[in-house]
Length: 224
Ligand SMILES: Nc1ncnc2c1ncn2[C@@H]1O[C@H](COP(=O)(O)OP(=O)(O)OP(=O)(O)O)[C@@H](O)[C@H]1O
Ligand SMILES: [Mg+2]
Image 1 (cartoon, rainbow, N blue to C red):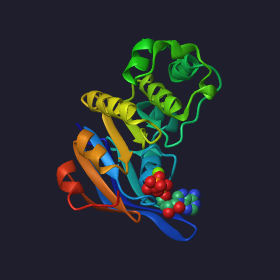
Image 2: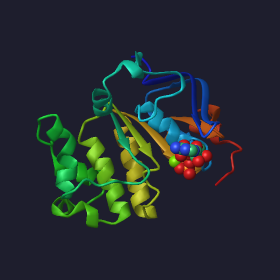
Image 3: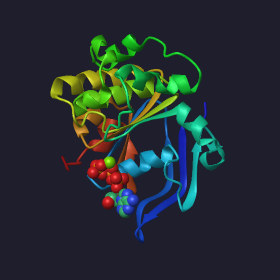
């Protein structure tokens, strides 16, 4: 099957400087970690892959289709995104999880099971999403993305607000769903990348500086 993403000659500029400059990058299937220090361009890369950013220069392909030629809504149904800071829609957790399927005209399949996957108790379904802790909202955001049955899941530091126990459980979930869905996981945690990723991309100052197996890519890196 065609590679999930290919980035060719892409440059993204803000305030007169390049915040992303990628000559050529092909991301494989599996769990791909994008790691790098703060400000390296990791979130910018994820936004590029979901067409939330359109590059000044270059092209991005999703399974050999040029992103700029794809319907953004169709793309975002197939490529789910979990943002670095969770944003809840108005209403209950169930409302949040049902949102995508409802837009597609279907009922959400097994909301309790989806909550279990992200380690939230079933009784959270009826709770007001805006009143949850940030860590709980982060997991609702993952559940909301999973409810759309995406082909690829882009996750921007999904464990940044979680305690160690919840972090481990979300990491196990990523490994599990990564067997059937491509996950592109932004992290600044080298140990997390080594634990969950099948491939690792290192970014620094807007550039991809190396990539390979998680073990190879993180060797000698030490910003955390
Ligand atoms: N809209 C913008 N205008 C100006 N600069 C921007 C804009 N968006 C991003 N940047 C800059 O681009 C760089 C990369 O930002 P990005 O959010 O991609 O970094 P990151 O690797 O995700 O960092 P973090 O780990 O802190 O989340 C940063 O220096 C940031 O200040
Ligand atoms: Mg970021």
